[in-house]
Image (cartoon, rainbow, N blue to C red; front, side, top):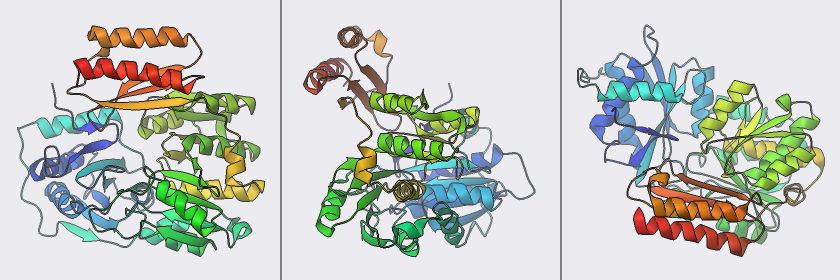
Amino acid sequence: MTPRLFGTDGVRGRAGVHPLDPQTIRRLGAALVRAQPRTATPRMLVGRDTRESGSWIEAALAEGASSEGAAVTSAGVVPTPAVAYLTRTQAFDAGVVISASHNPFEDNGIKVFSGGGEKFSERLERQIEAIVADRGWAVAPPAPERIGSADLVGAYLDHLRAVFPEAARLRGFRLAVDCANGATAPVATTLFDSLGFDTVTIGNRPDGRNINLGCGSTHPELLAQRVVERGCAAGVAFDGDGDRAIFVDHRGQVVNGDAVLLMCGRQLQREGRLARATVVATVMSNLGLELALRESGIELVRTKVGDKYVMEEILARGLSLGGEQSGHIIFSDYLFTGDGLCTALNVLRTIALTSRSLAELAGDLVTYPQVLLNVGVREQVDLQSVEPVADAIARVEARLAGRGRLLVRYSGTEPLLRVMLEGQDEREIRAWAQEIVEAVKSHLS
């Protein structure tokens, strides 16, 4: 069986350790070129976040790609969606992002986009894995000029400004922005200032090791504090690579991706831009989102967890909006991947066009209590094959009896099992979730 390299969001792991060791990265760079339809000189664009390992991973990847005849261009530190957009619009054959998103600095990863700006399909990922595993070939010596550089981010920012042509309606709006000491740090303030916002920025001093450290979309507490202290009308926190956004209202209350899908879905519907009156979300989105959309005549389609599955469903059905509770939101009119800056502008545009505050818009979503617990596991085995765990899951499902939802799944990027429960009584469902966790600890941890 071919060893797996790709998870739910690219190749992910500890920098310097397989599969992110230099030798494997070079083979991966070469395999990316080998798997593509051949052109005279394949063009590859590479961007990275602010982790200290990003530069040497970029160099190793470029060595492998150039050994197969590719011309590699580095965009430097840029958000993931910038690479997706620029790959499509600047006629690159593939785009690569070196980032581990919201993970700590010790980790890193490699995400790959096609020339159309879409994440690679699972079929193509399996093909690349097979090429890497084939020991019948070796990486040739790299070309003398392995990698060039280009300042392309201006075109991406122009693309974003076009998302919000009505920005003058919010001129002077005080907006707090948390860049997570990551890939949005060089561009976010420039973008929002240019649109007339009174921008208060934090998390914009990356040092290679402080990415996501107590800040960003996974730690919005600091942003919430700053919003209240500075009297901001709203706040937005990005993750390390800039493809997701979590919001904070003027009271310091966190607003997640479910509320964003509801407010933006309704806004697109009012404008006649919500294709097929349908929104895509994952199995993690709250039941309250499904009910609120239904009240507005909007259908909710669910996918597996992972924004690439959301994107695939959007493409298959010809839809315009989808996303995850975690803040990965895809507006396919603009890009076929999550884009935190684009999401922020769409939320701000909805605020402007409705003349409602973020708190008011988010208040339209009435959520069921939801509990999410994570437990470490040694390996990812079939849960039904472990009788005590299967029994615990069956007991909880019987108690729910149609009055909530249970989802038990493995993480695609970490050695974790995630247990999610929704129901009418938070204390009750937390106890039930803990029951499953204890069974997993006893038999799989």
